[in-house]
Length: 270
Image (cartoon, rainbow, N blue to C red; front, side):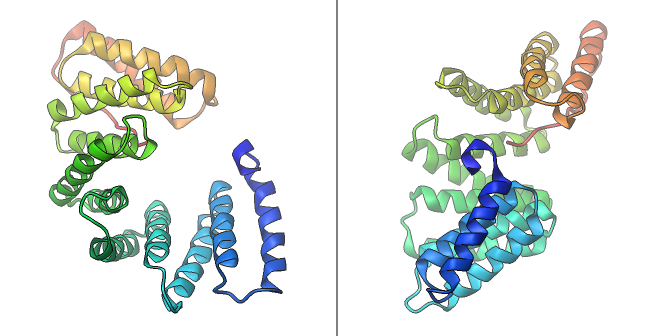
């Protein structure tokens, strides 16, 4: 049901199933733990981050106490919980979890494992939000080096890390370094079948901001218009992305006419 967008319906079914399993299996049974994580995903889907966090904290505690312990399952839960904490604004907790996950995965996985690269990406996002951009950039570049070798160009994990890297480069005014990454992402998304129009529109918005910051006003305007046309079909009139796209378009039209100096544009994370 969650795949069709009915996250609330999926939540109700999973809560019922979990209650049934609780009568048959102990808390550390794999079926209960897996269903609990599926429930956390549905709960997160409906926007109840506090409840998703509570469920994941409970699952993590059980996984940590298990004998024998499945280390990859532990770190998978830990990384997910770190992301929920980050979205909720609890950056210290998110950082602690992401660092612990990375340390433990480095003990059991080879350096070029994509799972390890994604753990570096998760920590990098938290560090960037805490202002530690130098270390965040180092981790993202390390993750990209692995993922670009090990994953197909259309893999969602690779695209996410590429966008994260581009956003970070924009944040530190490395516009020339961000631009080729964004162009690769857009080219990949344009070739995909079916196309993820939402992701493509957000990537174009980011590229438009980079181009404008570099003084390429005409192409910036063209890219922004492409993004806005898609977003207008997919989002409500008052959606933040759409409002920002319109503001950027108006600003770029004005700047294109006046050819004034560069001014920073907002970025959009996938």
